Image (cartoon, rainbow, N blue to C red):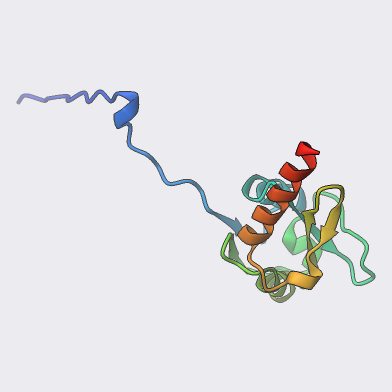
Length: 137
C-alpha cells in the first residue's frame, strides 16, 4: 500500500485569508477584565463599563455570573452592527447589570447616552475621526 503526502506551498500573495474576527461572544464564565479587553480589541475607540444601580463603575475580575449573583446560562454576541441600546438590553436581560459605552471625543471619554440608536461601528468610526482630528491640531 502506497501513501502519498502532498505538500502545498503558498506564496504570500496566494495565502488563504481567514475572515477577521468581527464578533465578540459574551458568556457567563467570562470575567469582566476579559470582556473589557476583548471589547477594546474589537472597538479600540470605545470603552465598555459595567455600572451599579447608583451609576458607579464595577471593577475587578468577577465573572458575568458572579456579577449577576446567580447562574445565568445566557450567552450573546456583540458585533459592530449592534446598536448601543441593544447591547445595554442584552446585559440587563442576561446578567442583570447595566452597561455604559463610552466614546473618545478628542479630549475625553463621554458616554453614548444621546446616541443609543447608533451602532458600535458607527460610534467607533466617529471616535476615530475625533482622535485623528485631535492629533492633527
